[in-house]
Image (cartoon, rainbow, N blue to C red):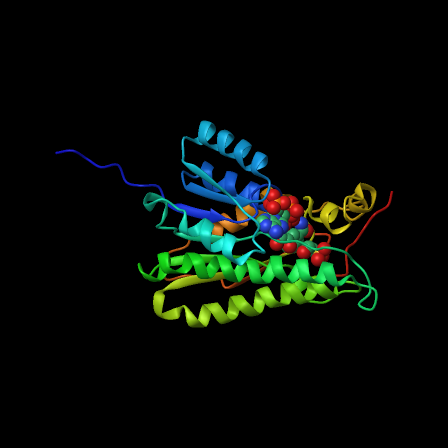
Length: 260
Ligand code: NDP
Ligand code: 8X3
């Protein structure tokens, strides 16, 4: 009798063109998952696709769109071919900070970008993907928040608001999705060296590099390993909330820096 090979599990990772998202995509690919990767930079996603498909022999599907645009989010998810539809794990990672200014001087445009990307984008994608999980009464949603959503810090205002919202949404989703056996994990990392600070400081490489001087920040791979771990637990166990920092960091504002 002809045997049909079992399909790989499927993970959808937003913001996979750099940083945590890219490292997480590589981690899941290395574990034999098929991966859907999203972002705006098509060239980066294509390069990642070629790399993971040739290295790990899995399937990779890039979706290029701006997560701030509601219709683009739904169109991208609706475009998924049937054999990509049973998404097992959704990782809401796309996001970031724009600007670091006192509340009274902060840019309204920066606030809009942060809330549209970190919060509304996450809500749109989750709403679009959810029917694939509720129909099967299984699934796992992992929301990447931040330590900035645990404790506000000076000049963090808009980013603090966005990441507090990510935790609030994670807690609310967990309640509403109980009848569907869907896990919701909120992960709140501290400082990790990615393009995050370059984006926050709008291309100022010197300012960005200074954020990570004098201590050992986390790497995107540290976060990818932790994200992956949360998906390896049995169906009846869910990590709800996880804070992870470099050992040199105690909270949002205490980082022990040695300047020698
Ligand atoms: P990066 O800047 O390296 O990655 C951000 C990712 O988000 C990119 O892939 C980018 O893709 C995507 N993205 C941003 N805006 C949009 C958009 N409008 N539409 C679609 N995709 C978008 O930063 P990190 O990897 O560090 O950040 C990943 C997540 O982790 C973010 O949510 C961030 O807030 C959070 N975080 C980061 C920490 C850190 O210290 N690095 C600590 C705590 C949380 P593209 O530009 O191609 O669209
Ligand atoms: C990124 C970490 O401390 O710069 O979310 O807000 S922090």
